Length: 369
Ligand code: F6R
Ligand code: MG
Ligand code: MG
Figure 1 (cartoon, rainbow, N blue to C red):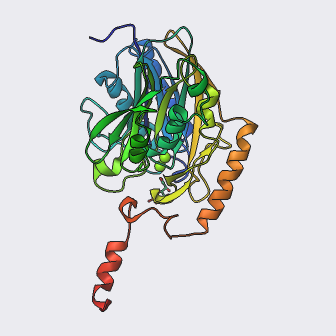
Figure 2: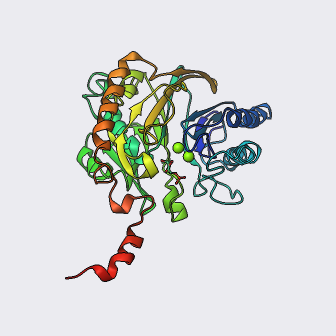
Figure 3: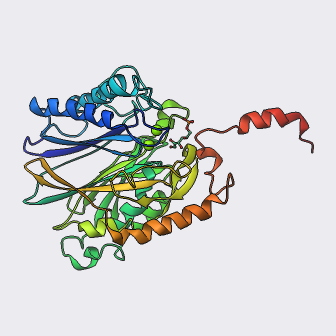
């Protein structure tokens, strides 16, 4: 039985249309979504919420007492995305209106229906700092490297060495996208096993992280639209929920993992590797323009207060991340010069769409041994 007092943080996200091309959400989309969630808050379904965006993705951050994978919460998100599509995206002919809503009607859980969901249920601590990460133009495995650094690398998180509450390590739940199965690995003991899996973020994705004693620490989205739909339907820009401080990695240890703009798949046509750039949620940075990118991440910080979200603090809005942004742009410039060649282009199995089959068909009689 679930305890009624437990709090759940749910982040549900979808790309339901944007201006111009796959660039940025329209302010009216945020307005309509806010209205929907405000109604749900008044009715007591959710405790609190924030509506925000990362590039062209609409993100619903909600707190409630209904637990993870709750049908009513998922229905609320689904209907909100539908409402935004019908009231704003379609009438304004926004680009790719309703893109991530892959099915006609809701059937109990958004998983497998298009939108991404990250959810974490826990008992609110005396003071509970929360970080929500949102990314655009990349895919769920993008969190593998930073989550590894945050929860398993003492060169990133000094608390693993110095804080007695972190010293026992963390348990990583790794989800295998191909097999639809997951495994829990305890670190540092099974560090090499963990890396053997998560080094392939196209297949293995860190879905949850728990402290050694079971305390819930992080949750991420694992939706792969192309696997659901069996064809290219846009990129599954991921979200992640992390709790911080007091026996968990500090806010600065979580953010430190993003000081290295590691390479992630996504960017133009979901088919190019590029550096993940940490940016402010402010519109001057939070939009993908160069070659529809480069991929980027925003970090919103909240204090929880009896389920209410106090914040957000715009955590990458710091000159200290300018070096990382400059480095990301340098890497972007370098890798772009590789044009349509691997490793800028992702491997053939990871291409979101390709003309290769047509080209081979056309040339088949012209190949000679
Ligand atoms: C990547 C992305 C964009 C589009 C590109 C082509 O995740 O959303 O880079 O893939 O703009 O879009 P279409 O195929 O809609 O013309
Ligand atoms: Mg889009
Ligand atoms: Mg997007």
